[in-house]
Image (tube, rainbow, N blue to C red):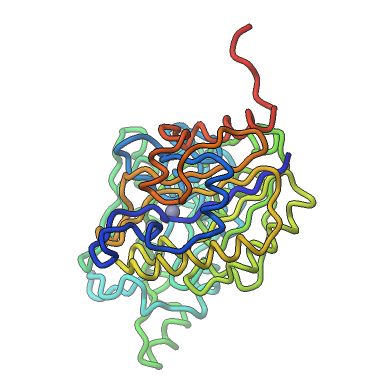
Amino acid sequence: MKVLFIVCDGLGDRSIEELGWKTPLEAAETPVLDRLCSEGACGLMHVISPGVIPGSDTAHLALMGYDPYKYYSGRGPFEAAGIGLELREGDVALRCNFATVENGRIVDRRAGRIKEGTEKLAEALSGMSIDGVEIIFRAATEHRGVLVLRGDDLDPRITDVDPHGLTGVAEARPLAPEARKTADVVNQFTRRAMEILGRHPLNAERAERGLPPANAVLARGAGIAVSFEPFERKWGMKAAAITGVALVKGVCRTLGMDMVDVKGATGGVDTDVDAKFRAAERALRTHDLVFVNVKAPDIYGHDGDARGKVRIAERIDAALGSIELPEITVVCADHSTSACAKNHTSDPVPLLIRAPCIRRDRPERFNEIDAAGGVLSGIRGMELMNYIQDLRGKAEKFGA
Ligand code: ZN
Ligand code: ZN
């Protein structure tokens, strides 16, 4: 049995006044999702556990059956994997911003959202060695980059260099005695990066054009690369992933999924949902499970745009209606992104599964309120893959 696994990023929400106290999903017209709901089972799912606010990275790990408390130490390694950097076990990776510093103070955390030339800057920073630790630096999208430390006895438990505001550049501090060396290397790197970038010709050029120089690197989100049992071996399914989000790509790539690039899949609100679902339909011919992430609901949630969320739910619904669905279809969110809180919240997410042999429950509409009355309520994200295995007839009995 083949599985289409759709994660609508941040789709879960709370009741919104301007929608007559409905959630965006309740306010949306979603005939296809509602039909799947009546033909299948639904429920509210705690993606990590009740009261825990998931990030997209920890949530996706949980949904794929990998305990984030065991496998997650920070965002860095998944950002690195997202841009195609191959990490080795024990590498410590950090996400970075190119920034503008003047007289020791940060004046622009994104160096004027620098877009061009960051590969050259990254090249100038990569390859040095600090206290026997190899430094690897790569440019990512726009003002972002990834810093990887490769060497012995590294420990990611350090504070961020990025102060997340317009103050002085912070020092990385160890949060455990074992992390002293790592903090030290990161601080030395930060100082050397300022020297190297300060005299880089690209910054002289930017100064001439009146643009803020990218003369500092602010690192944050340190995490250590651990080894993962590949998804295919763990679940016995060859899997493909379709997502425009670097972080989610990083998680999928780390688990060894095949990445399917789709023209028009941007990871933004302008993404081509139809193209993504058509690509999923094609990928299901060669894969047992196809995972699709649609990022747009999360973006609308962060922007506090409840009506945008209604529209994207309707677009997802229409796109889903235009493809042929496999035996098992799973639709859920990785977390709720509340349009009133403008952030992720711990509210459980709606989950819907249509499969040939499944309990058909009462709810006939796919939203947070109706789904609460569904038979899947109470399941956690970490348990979802186990249940999918059971539906496929591939789960093992515990005991005799
Ligand atoms: Zn998310
Ligand atoms: Zn978000």
